[in-house]
Amino acid sequence: MRTATSIEVSRNSRQALEFAIEAEKLGLDVCWVAEAWGSDAPSVLGYLAARTSRIRLGSGIIQLGTRSPVAIAQAALTLAELSQGRFLLGLGVSGPQVIEGLHGVPFDRPLTRMRESIEVIRQAFAGEKIRFSGTAVRIPLPGPARPMRLSMPPSGGIPIYLAALSPRMLQLTGETADGWLGTSFIPEGADAYFRHLDSGLAAAGRTRADLDVCQGAEVAIFDDEDAMRGHVASRKRELAFSIGGMGTAETNFYNAAYSRQGWSDVTGEILRRWQAGDRDGAAALVTDDMVLATTLIGTTGMVAARLRAWRDAGVNTVRLYPAGQTLADRLTTLGLAMDVVAGLG
Image (tube, rainbow, N blue to C red; front, side, top):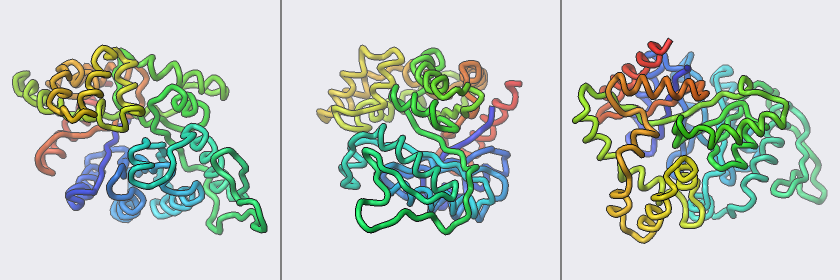
């Protein structure tokens, strides 16, 4: 398996950037840069393009609705040039709370918007005159305007990754993308994702070999299980936030993903309690197994076993979020985890 990580620089930016630079020295393959509702990804990626020479750099993710498809293509082409071909374009639809609540853009027809945006982005990558008349995207607008092409040199080799959790977006990923940026992954429940990815791949005449399956999770390695259990307990509120607070009461892709993978008996109540303001009550419903199943937390042997299960389920690239209070702690954990990956054979 290839190794990757993800950073976000809204807080303690210098440490996050130094982490990425040092991760390259450790031999990491890919660094993804998130933006969520904080710092933007392209600015950080441009900085890292100048400070690194080998590691691949990806937007993880640029959110549709925050930029036009052509603006996304312009950023991607620029970053591919600045990084000398090391850039990966990660896209996602985000959710209604961020898109509508923060950016003031309607969160409507996300699947259609993603499909149409990819078509426009690939027109721009190919150096074509950009023209598209779809349901969510129309370029140029009706009137005297004429189709234009970007003045930048074309670059058809920029891989496109989609962050997807819902069945229809997973199918679109299989149909159109070069990679899948996944999360909340449980190898024992992988069919909840792969049956939709495979359906999309088959519809496009493709196979799993055409798709980089990139899954991410926190990694924390302990010498004994007592210390591990304490760490697991500290992570329950974060997981409750994902299941109950990442979105709205009506639209929460993380909640749906955990429900499809075997926890439908508690996901609805976690959502209800979180949305009602009972954060402690929501966290109390999260079990140790829920945390351990979707992370890489444990002793060295436990983490190796989980990574082996991920690989056997079909994961090509593991995105490691190393735990630690300091930069040195996080880099140490990352190095240990990379050693475990290398030892899988």
